[in-house]
Length: 163
Image 1 (tube, rainbow, N blue to C red):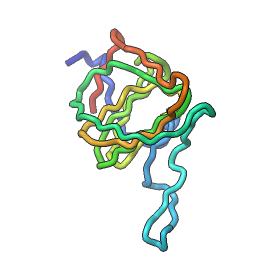
Image 2 (cartoon, helix red, strand yellow; image 1 turned 135 degrees about the horizontal axis):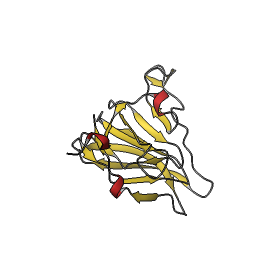
Image 3 (tube, rainbow, N blue to C red; image 1 turned 90 degrees about the horizontal axis):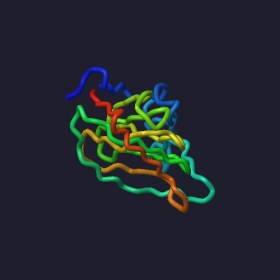
């Protein structure tokens, strides 16, 4: 599909590796406590949701089509007014691509095991959702006045993601 120089291979999604970009949303290794007369376990504060004073937090469902790998990256985006979280609702795996700037020179790719979600910090450049299996994702992000989505076409800087 493309030369080895343009390949970006996904690494396992871990809290430590993803920390510069946001938080991994998962129960594994997290403290919890019993609620509802012991019928449920609560895992609290799994991500630091950011939303500027002019907006509000909204929950949405993104219904994603499956993407076959390897696939070419085409766009990077960031949300300057709030964070954005993705949580798979049916255990579907997905690839997360992040970068330090609006190009792929510093890009990193991570693969979720399907029990993990992510919360991108405000302003973190990332590729749109790359679901490996079709399904619904719960998305928490900011709605309100102002432009909360900067997008760049990465065209000639294309990289291909693989696992």
